[in-house]
Image (cartoon, rainbow, N blue to C red; front, side, top):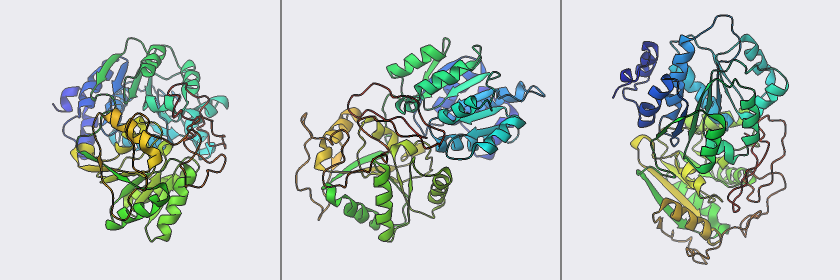
Length: 441
């Protein structure tokens, strides 16, 4: 199958050829014709499957063919959970639409609203936004959503997990009832189906990946280690190939910053990316990592969805996630487009239960190997009574978290909004263990 057979216009085909894309991915082949026909779409696709192009290509085609001179209101709205992902989608839209006269912009928190307001006043066809900042613009009446013809909900599962449902309902209530709605999610979980029933009309369904699936090219490894020696083991692993780009996941913002300081003091080039960083700092850290100026990027889950890096060879879980499904999202950064990747987890005795949950979710064993000199003093337990970090507490032998500085509080308290503009307005009530906080993207 070729892109030509999907019904795309020559200007889009030319842009794809410029990027060296010859054949559509399965999600693109399944979604693009449905969207071009005007149907609502419920699509299940993991990050790294080409889903951004699956909605942005037909979206650009519709915007180019139905342009209305003098109309300054946005005609398409793309909602996404994080600032990084919004910026990434904007980059892709601009690349695909470079031979079309379709205007676009991204609005998200962490930066001044002034330039965003000026851009909106000039008029744009496509707005890519995080829910919190979009609600801010709605409250200040600096955006008019009454002309939106197409709504895209990208990473819908993540937006629900981050507590954005009240914001989504408020935004959708301001849109025309007659519109096309496209919802992309990693799974067709019951809550996603419920969201589709509220926001969509007889959607077609396209699914290209089973729920919670991981790339077969990723090898999973576990190094057992006492919590007090995790940093030393991480440095040992990183020092073996100090020039290799490595993404490291920390459970908390404070832990990510502390880990970066330790790595830098040890001579490695490292940076952190999380919700307490300014947008400029987050953008700079991600750019430096992509360009090789830093080799280690330490991230929290809430900031990780927008990290799109080709040929990332390894992802390290310094802390296991409190919710097993997040493991799948984390390691989706490696092993992409058929490339081989490694998902390495440093697991303490207190995280045995979390590892058990991950193995159960993946329905496969994970290789466990001790590193000489870093042997675990108390063995991992992978039975039904396996321990796990208590809700609201850090692991033993680690310094307690300062109040208001946690990026993933298992007990579910909402973070305070510091004016970043991407605050969520509520929490979901599912998964009593590992309940997620409201987000500030």
